[in-house]
Amino acid sequence: MPGYRLAIVGATGLVGQEFIKILEQRRFPIESIRLLTSDRSAGKKLFVSHQETLVEETTPESFKDIDIALFSAGTEVSRHFSPIASYSGAVVVDNSSAFRMDPHVPLVVPEINPEDIRHHKGIIANPNCSTIQMVMALYPLHKASTIERIIVTTFQSVSGTGAAAIDELTTQSKQLLDGQAVAPHVYPHQIAFNA
Image (cartoon, rainbow, N blue to C red; front, side, top):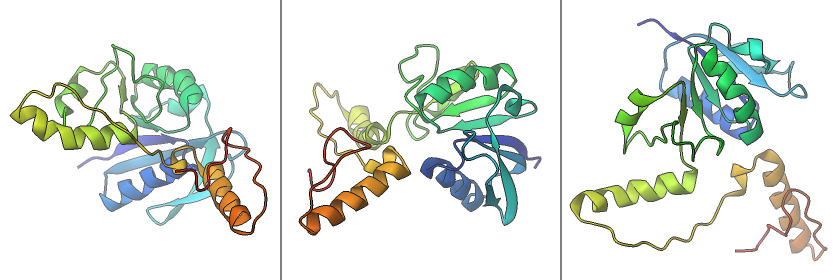
């Protein structure tokens, strides 16, 4: 089976790293892979399938000859580069909130509505993690009967914000356990022990 020419935008972030792990675990057929990030992380090297791969700055030219572009670098990056990648011929799978409410972009949870992928115009979005988990639980109930109303409370993981948020949670936890004051930086309020 021939492989795909992939780009991962946000490759040095937590989700980008998870993309790489899952592609390796599932032995996704890759002909080539381009790891893309901001200018501050460009030049780093990451391992993909036991091969050292240079991380490049994301530019409009990054998407030349790319079949699939996986985006997880935030809403602004997705809004700017996803249309460019799509216009260049790549199918974009966007993990940010940039296109979730766009009526022209299919919002897909593969276990629920995989057929919607066929209707893409170059960009495919996915819901946030809490929504995906919720619809996975609700879908069998929806198929069996009409759901008239649901009330949902979610607890969001700091990892969804990225490495800086995880570091802040760790630092604040240590500070509070040591009886020290906490100074939030990533979030507007204290995140440690706030549930």
